[in-house]
Length: 240
Image 1 (cartoon, rainbow, N blue to C red):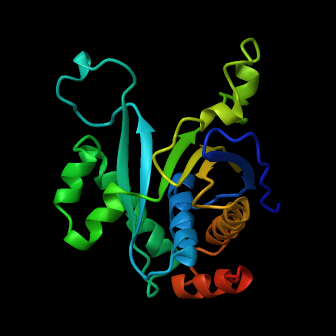
Image 2: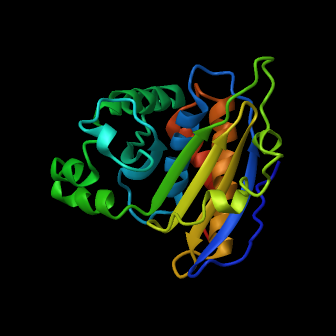
């Protein structure tokens, strides 16, 4: 299914878009890892420099001890810069394995703090951490006991005003492009907001289309080389 974008009302200098990617993932890698890898490839395609890609990932709750957490009011959320290192000599499965291992190994440091993390990096990478261009908010939708997908909207049908797709991303204005990604068994539903002064709707649509192609190709051809996959995707989505 081709990626589609549907512009909604502007909220200040930001515009909202939505898309749905239908997937079939039979691999040992999580859909979140596949999405992160595909997004790194998409950013590499549209980036003018050949360098590591940093994607800021936001998650809720905690998976590591946090001192004095019980005295912290409000929700517990964390932003974690995730490097996506694209090595053309690797296979797709090696690329995903390295990425998934890095995500797992970074869990104890989730609450270390972005600025503290930046202080440990080479000087030429600090700006990529402190001023990320994209923010990803992955959200795995739980399945029912019967193995079927749980429809979040149906679970909240008695309070429909609570679940609004556009509200799931509204307010995330720290990056040029912020994506709230609902990961289901057979699809990825994305609500995104982008800074209109930096990205046009046409550019966001092109990103979505490349992202969908990358996700589907990664799911289907994990023994393919990264270099071969990049050549295929770049020829399918030439820069204008």
